[in-house]
Amino acid sequence: MKNILVTGANGQLGSCFRKHGEKYPELNIDFKSSGELDISNIAEVKKLFSSRSYHCCINAAAYTNVEKAETEKKKAYQINAEAVGNLAEVCASQQVKLIHFSTDYVFDGSSSTPYRETDEVNPINVYGASKLAGEKQIIKVLDDHLIFRTSWLYSEFGHNFFRTILNKAEEKATLNITTTQLGTPTNANDLAIYILDAVQKNSSATGIYHFSNLGHATWFDFAEEILKFSGKIDEVVLNKTGFFKTLAQRPEYSVLSKAKALQDFGEIRDWRRSLRDLIDEVV
Image (tube, rainbow, N blue to C red; front, side, top):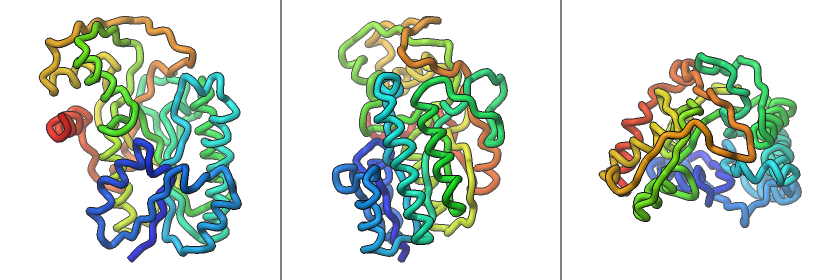
């Protein structure tokens, strides 16, 4: 039995770890919500780690509101950088592997080919900058780490684009969805399973990896497929737009190369297939 700690257990990604964790009986998973463990409080983190021996810590805690981060910079950095540094420091002292999640928004979107792990980073919003700062905190103090950059996460849990579009369909709304950003929708369930599989197999891999579902799409493409697969395409008016006003600047291109993850960890599903399967399950 391996003792695994999952932080941020009530968030979107943490909820996916809860959902699928029971399928791994050889992993003894300790789920901690932000209310149960404040990772920005290093004394709390040290107390927990001193009371129990962990094989690895999966950090699903994060500040994820890209828009609010522009006006809540201190809070975004506190959670996405300083608190991550706390976890990394304690994991280093206890010889615990840390698995952490970052974002495609560490890139500026100027590329026209999928971003590799070694490509230059240059975040253009506070959220991306705070996540990059978290990466650096980990790398500075802990060798035994895995950082997975991911993109456009959605699931049946929490607040996300997938759930918003389905809710708007129920309201028979008119939707104006941008076509100016190209990336990859990523089913958070797939990411959770990918990580749990790696932990179960006791992977010795370390460093930065990219994980999103395969393929690419605009936000309009994503919305259209959600509505098609759910049978709700005729319940809304869906319009393309080249302009969508946001406070935070977004990279126009943020497709991630998964070649390294495919080589070291195995198969990843296409985003449309994964979306269809989730809709079949929950809609």
